[in-house]
Amino acid sequence: MAEPVAKKPRPAPATVIGPSNTGTGAEIGTQLFVCVEHLIGLYPNSIRREDMAMRDGFNVLYNEELFSRLIKHHSVKWDPKLELLRYKPEYDLQSADDVVAELRRWLPRGGMPVATIKKSWPNCMPALEELERSKRIYVIRTEGSTERAGQPKTVFLNQTGKTQPIDEAFKRPLVEGKTPDNPELIKELEEAGLTPANAVALPATLPSKAKKKGPGKGRRVKVANQHIEGVDFSRDYKPAPQ
Image (cartoon, rainbow, N blue to C red; front, side, top):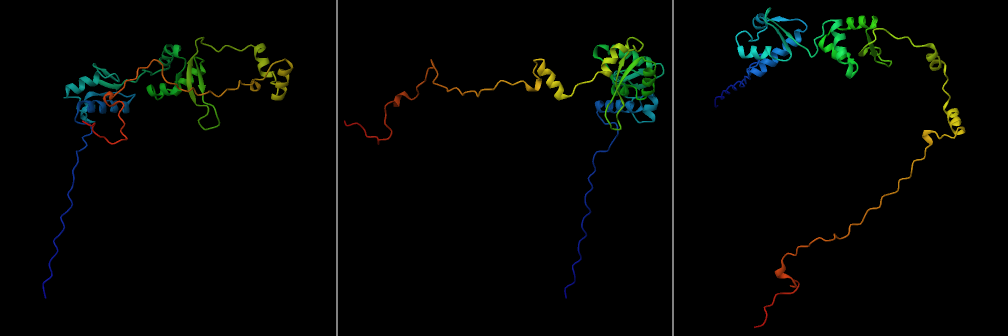
């Protein structure tokens, strides 16, 4: 009997090694973006330059180009005396007076969304509530029956500094006045010679007639192949007799 042939072991699958995740990237633009995102995550706290380099692994201590571009970024605030870096939001709000000052600049645009204030000052709600109690701002809240009903949506600056009372003579007709029912209102309008808005007859729209396109006037027609004009191609060609 023939001896059995031993099976060759299968080679192990090749391991593909991809690029390692360095965390901060190799390009200067990528490193700058990651640094700014790191400061956003720390906001409203600041961080020392050395701590950002030694503790968090960002090369802002020895890479002068990266550090120069970082402190010149429009979303970064740099304190050279204390060597502190901090994220600078669109609106620098850290107190109730800052909110009032920003609302004063927002007057031409109206109210300021609460979501915009929260982006610049995440812990702004106690200050907004205190400003509302002191009647320095007006707060518009969400409506409806959901759980989010009654949440502050937009704030407006109270330019007078106090809430003006509404005169009772003005408020009484609005509160006590009775709005007539729809059938009664239509009847009163008809008796007064007025037509209800939903009864106005709209003018009938006539179907538009499609215009027939005639031959263009004054258009010059170019005749091609003038050398075969008058030739009957349905007949076989016969040379003319000599």
